[in-house]
Length: 278
Image (cartoon, rainbow, N blue to C red; front, side, top):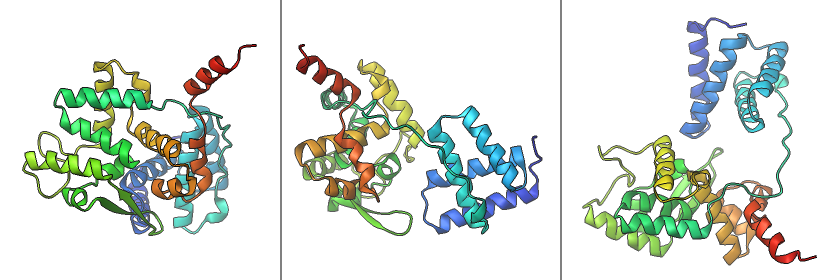
C-alpha cells in the first residue's frame, strides 16, 4: 500500500545520505541507494521484517536480478545505518553466463577512435581513449584534471579508504598534453561540455550511442563500461597477470577479475566455427 512521504521520511533520507557520504561512497552510489530507500519508504513505510520481505518479492517481480540485488544492497546498507542488521535481506542468486556479452572489439574501438580523430571530434576521441587505455569507470574518468595528465596518474580512494592509482599510459599522456595545449587549458577538469561545465555520466552514455549510430557500429557494444571491459581483456591478452589487472581495475576480490579470462559470445562462435569440422 502506498505510504505518505512526510517530513519524517525526508529526515530519514537525509540521515542516510550523510551516513553514505561519511563512508566515502561515490556520488552515483549515494544517488542509487537513496532512490532505493525512497522507493521502499513510499511503498512500504516502516522498517519491519514483513515489509522487507514484501519489498524483495515486489522487486523480483518487477526488475532484473542485477537491479534487485542493487536495491537490496541499498536497503541493507540503511539497516546498518540504523543498527538493525538483524533484518538484512538476502540477495537473489544470479546465474552467471560463461561468456562476456556486449563488449566492443579491439577492431571496432580502433575504427571508432580513428573516425573521431579524422573528423576532429577530439573531446569524444579522448573520452573513449581514456576509458579504453586506463580502465576507468565513467565516474572516475570525469575526475581527471589537466594536472593528472601532466603527472601521468590519478589517485582514487575507494570505500573504506583504499588507494587505487589510475595510470595514464605515456603515449596517451603526451597526446592529451598536446590537445590541452591547443585548447590553452593548463588546469582543471578535462572533460567539459560546450558551456564549460563538466559533462555528465548520462551525457557521455547518450553521446556514445549517437556516435556509434553515426559510424555504423553496433550501439549495443558502445557504452562507457564497455571500454573498461576492453581494457581488461586486451591487457590480459598482452600481459597475462590477473593479480596486477585486479589491482589496476580496483577489484577487491580477484574472482571478479576472472570474468576477463572468458571469451565473448562472438569470440566463442568464431572459435567453434574454426575448430569444429566433424
